[in-house]
Image 1 (cartoon, rainbow, N blue to C red):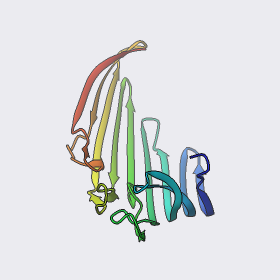
Image 2 (cartoon, rainbow, N blue to C red):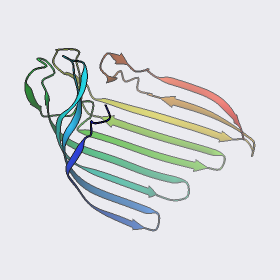
Image 3 (cartoon, one colour):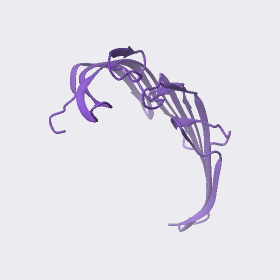
Image 4 (cartoon, rainbow, N blue to C red):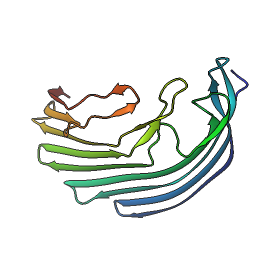
Length: 196
């Protein structure tokens, strides 16, 4: 529908950043009030302007190349949200949910890179806190568990045109869902080579 349009009635971001040589750090506080968000009416199967959201939180980012061989980065986001919407169980009245669908309150990502002669190693971790997703038609929302991912990528550069690698995802074999009802893959390992 071309006439539907979400409006941001209030949007604030306040931040501070620090940079010295190759070290970078940033902290940002944000606050958004959105009115007339777009929703879907399950009764007449049509989109309409309705949702109102209040979202605030903080983002922290740090990048620190320790030296030429070691580099470290961190990202953290805290998100607090509230949404006034059509009741997803009754589809008739209005309700305020004290969370945002599919969006975690806490998310953290870490990455550590090591480079030594012909070797490169990248270790990364990701933590996503519990969050809610739609449980189905006319049913309550479902809480999805938190999950933690640990990944690694190792590469050996034989020469200027050939390198070998091992890529490992979800090393800890964490079982989780990003969308309700759809499991993600478990541990995966790829071994291969690249021609440059």
